[in-house]
Every structure is written in structure tokens, then in C-alpha cells.
Length: 204
Image 1: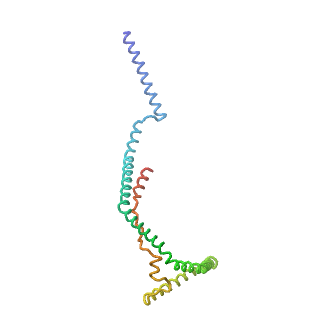
Image 2: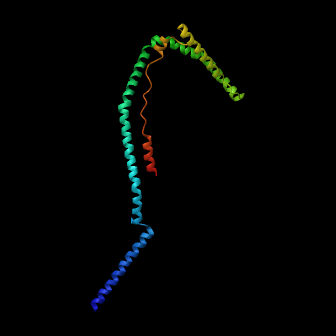
Image 3: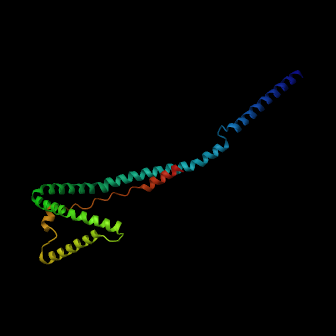
């Protein structure tokens, strides 16, 4: 009997201790919200799809950037080098032609300097007409139309008589002013939409 009473006492004491531990842990979790718990597991399960999508978007972005760089190296770079070579040849040619073109350059600069006071006068008159008189009228536009009209007449004379009175001769223009370089090669379109998709995924 005494032995039974002793074990009974031990069982009751152990039961009380265990209940106190469980109750204490329950109260502690409720008050400070520590530990993973089922809520934390569900939150992780919700994050996993977004993480997978963002990682996939990042990988796709890197792949597209690499493909874009390869496209630039294979398709654009040779065209750029050819364009650059033409530009250098043109620049060297024009530099070597400076002695033969110097007189034409001086005449062009002198003509622009001679016209400059008239240009400033027309510009001032346009400001007065627009802001003081409040009229929708431009002297510079009229002057430009006159110049284009004279240019058209010059082309008519060239087509019929073989000479310009508004331009240098074709030989002078070709030697001193023009180069067959071609247009700057168009750079392949950067895959910006993949970068935007990745940044949007991260920003959510």
C-alpha cells in the first residue's frame, strides 16, 4: 500500500509539472508569437510559388541578356566596325583635301558671317511681332521660303544648263563636303521587358 501511495504521489507530481510546462509554453507562444507553428508553414507555402516565379524570371532575364550580347557581337559589331572604318577613311580624305577645299570653306564662312546680322535682325523682328504685336507671323519663315524658292530655281538651271547659282559645283561638293558613310548600324533591341518583369516580381 505504501508503495502504491508513493507511486501515486509521484504520478500526480509529474502530471502537474507536465501540465504546467504545456500551459506555460502555450501562454508564451500566444503572448510573443514565437516559433513556426502552422501559420508560419502556411506562409512559407504561399511564398514558395512567388519565389519560384521570381527565380524563373531572373533566369530568363539573364538568358535574354546573354542572347542579346551574342546578337550584338555577331550581327551588330561587324557592321559597326565597317561603319567606323568608312568614317575614318572619310575623315582622313577630307583632311587631305583641306588645301584644295580651303578657298570654298572660306567663302562659305564669309557668306554665313555676312548673313548673320540679317538673321539676328529677322529674329528680333519675329520676337517683336510675336510678343508685342501678338501676331501669328514669322519673317524668318518667309525668308526660308524665299531661299528654298531660289534653290528650286537653281536646280532648274542645273537640269537645263548644267550649272548652279545657289550651290557649289557637284565636283566641289563631292570633294569637300560629302562622304558615303551610310547610316549608323541599328543596335539590336535590348530585352527591357524581361528586366521589367523581374523587377516587378521582386517589388511585389
